[in-house]
Length: 169
Image (cartoon, rainbow, N blue to C red; front, side, top):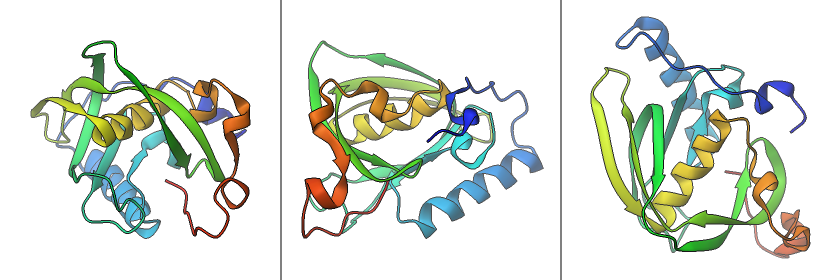
C-alpha cells in the first residue's frame, strides 16, 4: 500500500493466447500459490493490465468457505444481482498483516475472457462473489481499506484476531 501503481486504473488486454499473456498468468499463479492466496490481480505484481486470477479449493485459511473454481478472468465486467450487501473480513497481499470488515454485494454476475479469449459468464454468491469483487477492485485502483465503513473494524490481524495465524490474501 502506497505504491502508486496500485492506485492506477489497469488497461484492457488486447491480445489473447499470446506468449506474454501466458507468461503473466504463470507468474501470477506462482505468486498466488506461493503465498497460499485466494486471488491476485496483475497490478499487485506491477503489471497494469486487467487480469485477475482466483480460486480456492480446500484451504485451511478458509475452512468455512465454499470452493471457488480456479479462474483466469481478463477484462472483467461485474454487475450486482439484487441489493443485498454483506460485510466480511478481508486481507490483502498489498496491505500485509492487516484485516478489515468490508461491505460487498452478496451476489454478482461477472463476465470477461480467459487467456485464450474464451468467454466467461457466471453468477455467484457469498465467498466466491467477495473474492471476485476484491480482485477486480485492484483493476480500478481500489484497495479494500478504501471500502471499509468504520475504521474501528480495520487493524492488524494479530490485534483483531489474537492467537490466530492469519495470512494475507
